[in-house]
Length: 249
Length: 249
DNA sequence: TAGATCGGGCGCACACTGTACGCAAGTGCG
DNA sequence: CGCACTTGCGTACAGTGTGCGCCCGATCTA
Image 1 (spheres, protein in one colour):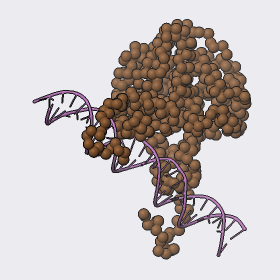
Image 2 (cartoon, rainbow over the protein chains, first blue to last red):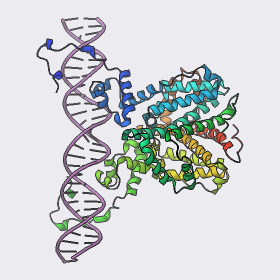
Image 3 (cartoon, protein in one colour):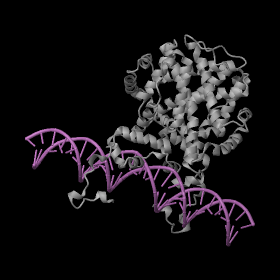
Image 4 (cartoon, rainbow over the protein chains, first blue to last red):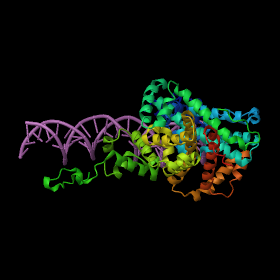
């Protein structure tokens, strides 16, 4: 359609732009896909949109990526690459180290909320190198704390399962709000009302609901997350050589 | 296209089948959607297929259901309705009661593996009546064990988060295998090889991988799940009046 | 009994999706 | 120089969710 597609009348008329464009590499594609996913969620990522964003046609992407599925798998692992390594200090203080790592994971998931939904479909993105590295780090912390390798593995799986499960709900809410273009505070009222109506028939649930009165929802989620994590670490402590004292709540 | 669509030559030729068909109710639609999801996963559910399965056109469904999203939300809650209520015995023995409920939840998710992926997207299916009832049950168990309502809420959220997180990975694998039409044992070899290659650069992860040698993958997942759960319950125990002795591993 | 009202089912249409295929143009090696 | 090979792209196809308006059958009213 555009003039670019027609044969130019003479060779000289065609500007020799050749490699003016960054030439569309796999890393480039993945990076842009992540940006799209962050801003518009999983539904916002289509091959055509992604291509357009890169100044390319949709089908060009398939030279560098086999599938949309594979692209997403790559995006997931790339995002996990954002997790900074744990440092020496974490090896000395297992409880603090694990807590810090878990919090970083939570923040990472909330920063890229589509990750939760996507890795529930993809499943075995667990084998990507960056995810593997995160496991290795925490494994090392537990081993340094005196766990056998089996216990360390059990502890890591338990903690990671908790982090993913706890953050999934938060992430889904974040995405739903974003897709509606709403702010958290705008929806807080409607959400609260719905929650109250849902909980009312159930006495304990309703009581629990009431105990949240007047608190900010983001705040609730965060303290619930850290308190639950400490509970789990209390349970894990006896597996270590130097069980820290329980968290004390 | 078919003869049914043409005006019949005379009124008498048209059989008066009227309400021979069960008349397409919301419950009926949701039930059939669940069957489709179970057999073919999330990608197997399209409005056209669902309509065809019910002997109806795709757009007819929209008389009973606002969206595909709403339909899925209904399906999720309907599935959670399969959770059987906890009985009196669970109130007397909190640890056993919570363990049984958690196991039932795991089995339910594995029976309908699409649930994990879907509720990560939908998010606030948590407000459906059946999910709410499940929360209420476990909440009651913890309260009966002497927890304050806040502690009970914390405990429930922690346990549920763990169950969801731990089962998500398993469910995703189940679906992926099913969509390929493969059996678990057929893939075990390939998967194992991939896992070994992925773990090799990381010493602790590789050691952990080795400790699984020769065990059945379904078995690994199940014992990991229950052991992790017991760890968490060890951490939760001090919140109760009558802390059961730790699980003892 | 005749007519009005209404709700549910359906065909059509639209915008959009992922991706297979084959062509054209540029790059690097002989 | 010629030739293989890579890379981008236009087209096409099957399939998606869903808005719109028609029509038919059932029920209610006069």
